[in-house]
Amino acid sequence: MNMENAVLIVERPHKKVYKCEKDIVKVFHPGHPKADVFNEALNTARVEAAGLDIPKVKEVTEIDGRWSLVIEYKDGKTLEEMMAVDADNMEKYMEDFVDLQLQMHGRKSPLLNKLHDKLARQINGLKELDATTRYDLLTRLDSMPKHDKVCHGDFNPSNVIVGKNGKMTIVDWAHATQGNASADAAMTYLLFALKNKETADLYLKIFCKKSDTARQYVQQWLPIVAAAQLTKDNELEKEFLMKWIDVMDYQ
Image (cartoon, rainbow, N blue to C red; front, side, top):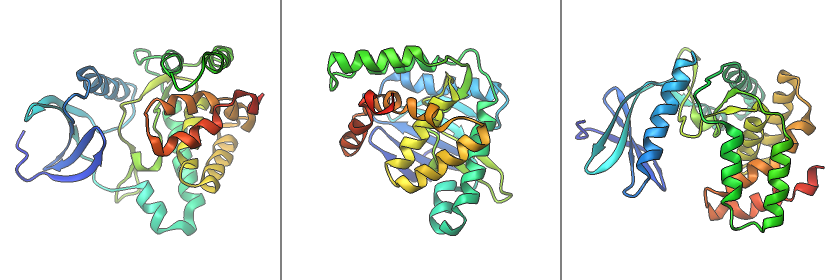
C-alpha cells in the first residue's frame, strides 16, 4: 500500500484514518489487538453478505509495522456535517437517519457475534461497578428479548456518508453484532445525548414512531448500554454514563 499521497482525515486514540487514492486506510496504533482488526474486517464482510450496500473491505495488511485495514472509499459528506450546517432541517435529516437504521435492522447475519453475549462480557469486566450493580445489570439483560437483527453498535451521524445523489451509506462496522434493535437504538440515543439531549430526544421520538416501539422499552436498555459504553474508558464520558447505570431509574 503506497501511503505517499495519503491524507489524514480522522484521528482517534487507537487509530488514524487516511484517504488514499480510491481507498480509506485505517492504521491502528501499536499494541492495538490484532484480533480486533481482523474482527472488524470479518464483521464488515458479514454485513456486506447480508445485503447492505456498504464500503467493502479490500485488504488487511501491515503498514510500518502497524495493523491496517484498506476499505473502499465512499465519496460524500458525513450526515453529522450536514446536520451541523443545516440545523433548520434537523428533523428531516433525523427521519432519514432512522429510516437507514431500520433498513439495517431489517437484515440478518447469522454469523455475527451475539449482542447479548457481548454486553454480558462487557458488564462482567467492569470493575468500576460493584458486584451488586453488575448483578442487577446482568439480570436485566437476561430478562430482555433476544433478537437476531443486524445491529451497528455505534450508529451515529458521523458513521453515515451522504453521497452527492443523496444516497446514504453506513460505515465503521467494528462493533457490529446480531441482536435486539432497541438496544442498538438505546446506544444511538446515548451517543446523541453525550452531545445534545434535545437532539437525542428527537431521535428517540422518531425511532419509536417509525418502528412502532414503546419509548419505555428502549429506555429499559439504557443502563445496560451505558455500562457497555463505559468499557471504552473515556474519562470525558464517565460521569455522564454513570448517571444512566442506576437500574432502579427505569423499573
